[in-house]
Length: 285
Image 1 (cartoon, one colour):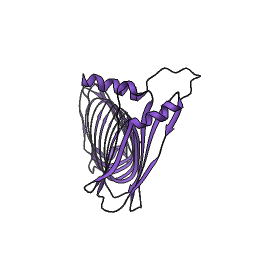
Image 2 (cartoon, one colour; image 1 turned 60 degrees about the vertical axis):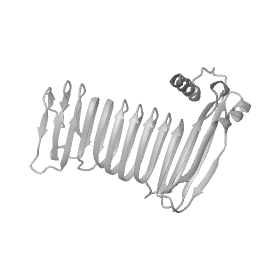
Image 3 (cartoon, one colour; image 1 turned 90 degrees about the horizontal axis):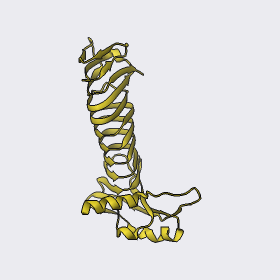
Image 4 (spheres, one colour; image 1 turned 135 degrees about the vertical axis):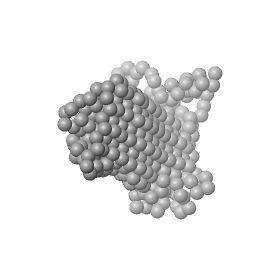
């Protein structure tokens, strides 16, 4: 019964309803801005149906903007239902923890409820984000851990480490360096200027990976199409396996039902990819 109640609550919060073209949704929101000074060694965010934005900057404090949002065809109801959105931002030891949730009986909530969380923080501090039903966008950070389900993820300019777990959540990664560990289920992956040592475990999706460094790049996929582009394909060492699929090399050669092992005299890096029931393509940028 608990899981049925959770599913029903999720449907209400998602605001799935049929509206005619003439119906206009009224929006109600409020803003709560907070600032946290010294003594913070990291930031953790736990969001539910939240839009989360994190930006690293040359600042000493962590600034947090919390904005609960309620949408309803009736403005008065939109305002009244704001009380069902709960949130907090407080230090737990030396970690700043930010949370939001929705509390209320199912029949009481008549609005489409959501949360907006914006954070400006020192670039050097690590951040951990968990979000269910909503987009996450972060950039100009040293390191990040992201766990996103039924949403989306956009990362840009991560200099040291990115640890990502995604379910039903497409991701775009730009200029990620250092090390990247990615687990993706039913989620497409798009990278641009990927300069990190990267390990990807993925299933049921597409991985379009543009590399800017030497890797190594290791992909372990299941029913995932893998497309890789590099500046100089002929300089890499390859270990490629695609059972029930094709391997398409940058020179146009294709292989089916056989692995491809290539080791140039002076390899610039390693690309090691295994997938099944889908193709692997190596191309020049």
